[in-house]
Length: 145
Image 1: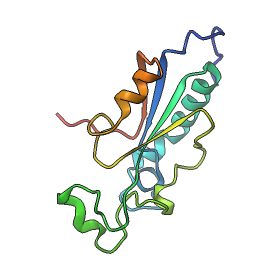
Image 2: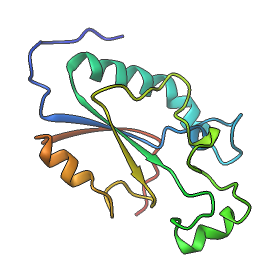
Image 3: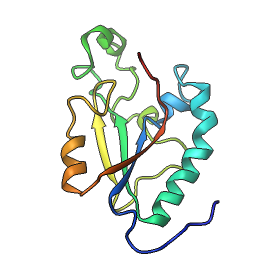
Image 4: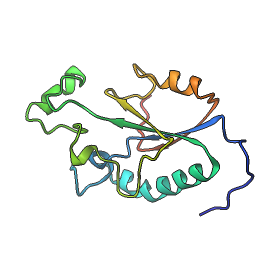
């Protein structure tokens, strides 16, 4: 692990968003929908979280968790939940964080029910009330243009 520069609270205005690092999305042994690239980045994300913790960076775990019935899923994906086996079902093994990743005291768990942590969530409020001005974003991402 890289050495940690400085001490004190120079990182107090920074948050790390750890996005979608759940078994359904990154662990091929748990889900056929998991991205191989997600499993490949897991060690790097684990190390980044450890460095962030050493620096006192506020960690926000962005996870998808859905009602087993799919009531809170976008309409065009709801049919995947008709059998109660959709991705990110609350309480399922697939909704758990990938191996080696753990939410700890002082971290924040942000549940999203859409594709984005930035739309229709209270992320903005959490960051503002925490005095956050800078973001570091890690995890399983797709960019749509």
